[in-house]
Structure formats: C-alpha cells, structure tokens
Length: 115
Image 1 (spheres, rainbow, N blue to C red):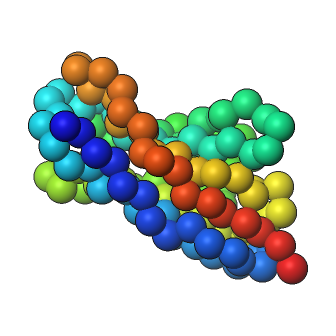
Image 2 (tube, rainbow, N blue to C red):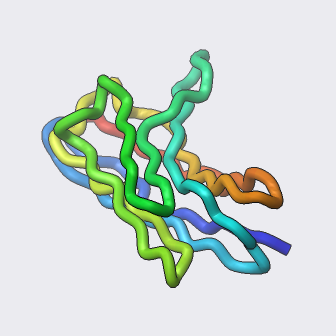
C-alpha cells in the first residue's frame, strides 16, 4: 500500500519561511513526477510546483521566485522550500506522486501565514 506523509506545516508570520517535506513509502513503480498542490478555504485545489524524474520544474506564477521544489529520487521524497510567505499562501498543502500505476495524494498539511 502506498503512503505519502507530509510534514513541516505550521503558523508563520508574513515574510517568513517554511519547508514542507513529503516521503512516500510502499511499492511505487515508474514515478513520472512529484509535486505540491494547495487548497485554500472556498477555493479549488491548485498546482503549486512540480518536478519530473528528469528534473523539469514547473511553478505557479503566484509562487515563482519565492518557492523552490526539490526531490531525492532514490528516497522517493520531495520538498518545498517556501520563502517570503504571504497571507494568501495560507492553505492546506498536499503532496502528489504521479506514476505509471496511478496518482497518489498525501493527507495534507496546514500552512497559515498570519501576523
């Protein structure tokens, strides 16, 4: 059974930083990409950042230049370094893995940016 476990969320003041991590366990074959999504109250879930196995990276316009995604292929982990956080970054952040056997989601971790 595949499990994705996220960590690193919390409460931070505007301008602060947080680092999210996601570790995948279980039998996952043919991982194509890993990424982070977020969902704010009353809004649709949106892509924040993604990274493919061969290193291609994509960021949402709203986080470009502030967030950095990275992955460790051998360990099936992906991280999201979030700097210069804004109140509008407040959301539940979800890790996702896309593989030949399907897509897998983590349970989500809350990020709150507030003074």
